[in-house]
Amino acid sequence: MKNRLKVLRAERDWSQQALAEKLEVSRQSVNAIETGRYDPSLPLAFRIAQLFELQIEEIFEPER
Image 1 (cartoon, one colour):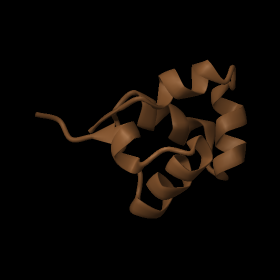
Image 2 (tube, helix red, strand yellow):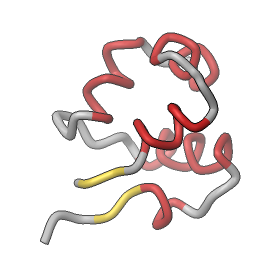
Image 3 (cartoon, rainbow, N blue to C red):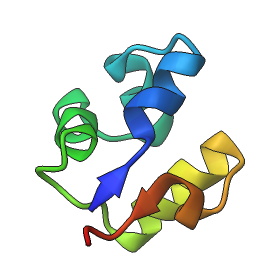
């Protein structure tokens, strides 16, 4: 799944660790999501969308 998480995080000047703390996950989880090695659970995707005040579809999109 493709995502804009790294760009959104950078726009706010947040480190992976800072984002991880806000989402209550590990920094490694944030890194894995950003690099596409891990797709977040639906509850985590909702938390990410809520944090960035966006719809899930504005952050994540399926691979073509």
